[in-house]
Length: 47
Image (tube, rainbow, N blue to C red):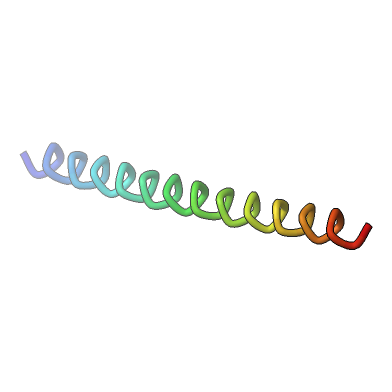
């Protein structure tokens, strides 16, 4: 019985970690896209 509970807890922790990493990746990609857009805008305004 303890094994099933421990297995469930480990599975929940793994899922939570995956969700955190997924959210962090999404935020990072959005930040990078914004930076790329800003750089592209700077290049166009200089010309």
